[in-house]
Figure 1 (spheres, rainbow, N blue to C red):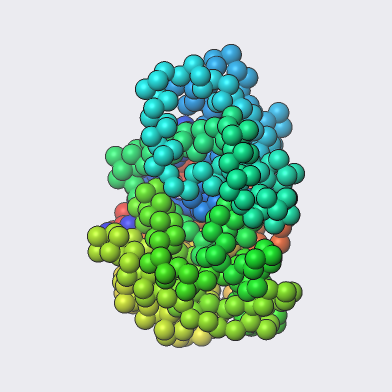
Figure 2 (figure 1 turned 90 degrees about the horizontal axis):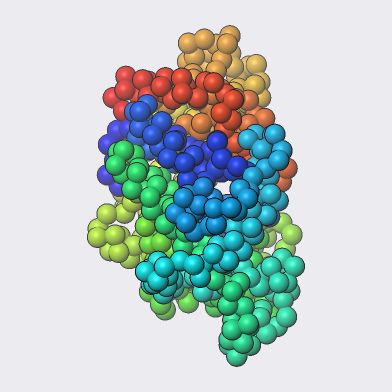
Length: 498
């Protein structure tokens, strides 16, 4: 991946301010991009743009190909005539909506917009309707996605393996009858995705005009309760009775005696190989239509993955199995005309084979400054050990504490050992880590927006292993430091020739 020396900010669209319920693909995103450009920031990084699970996580999505309908901007739809002018604007009655995303309210907004768009559809001119129909016919994933989402609604949000067998097992005759009886409902789901696609293309065009690169993210595995697995069961470790016979996770380590059990099905690589990895290539291609470059989460599983027996409750009894990463990356590189715009999420216990796979395809890896200061002079995350450019350096990621929270959790002995690295040890702020990251040789430095505002852990986006208060943090316009923090960040980037 070719990238100029630059800087970026990590902020998911849900966290954007000045929009009802949560940020989205409308004015809040346009304002944000213009603020980045005026500050001299070159990259906007965000999490997967897919629909979330019930806990708000975009890493456990019901669809690998769809956009999260929470992002659809009602004001833009009104201006373009896709909604009636007399329609009530759907917004939160809660004064605290700009501090946290209310998932229940966000889903209610989607339901409201879906039915409203359908009600107004017959009034659209034929040219627009033909444009929509042409788009739908070009999206190979759309039919399965919309059927899956509507069947979930009609089955009280139960997972697909608890639906009636005729739907769970995709009986062609029964599904054809059901589709005929639910045309209006399916139209609603299709319209949501079309409008999201239209709105994001405008955001992408604006970013390009402003000289800002969009940095996306794709999970390695997909949720069992997803349109992807439901419609392609043979590609995953799913038995004919819908049970999972192998599940994903990582082995026991220093942090966890029982490992981490993620529970998603693993890939049946032999089936993927038979189709020349068509599903994987289409998935990556779909994401690369939306962004300039893409972080591949859990990259190490492209070399080998930890497979856990389907009925196990911990990851202890798993075993390593090989992955065809070399074949997949080779084909994706060919699809991308010889240039792979991918970033390897290579955190954790990484082997030399994983490093070789990353380096053979010249993928940038990740360095996290919060992992650097353990007293080990050989620590690969130490700034002085980042000796070449092909890295992306972060203060922390969406899964880490904020940098202020990290400092406050650190024991006093460790603080004393690294005090000489910080200009103002007594009054530590996130900017101490930001400064260190900016000065590294890495071609890209990225900080979460929370660190620019020196926020504590109450503003953390996600704490792995927990389900409370994750994925819901929002940037508040009441914080008067936003523009000043962006300006300061841009000035620091410029001083470091970024």
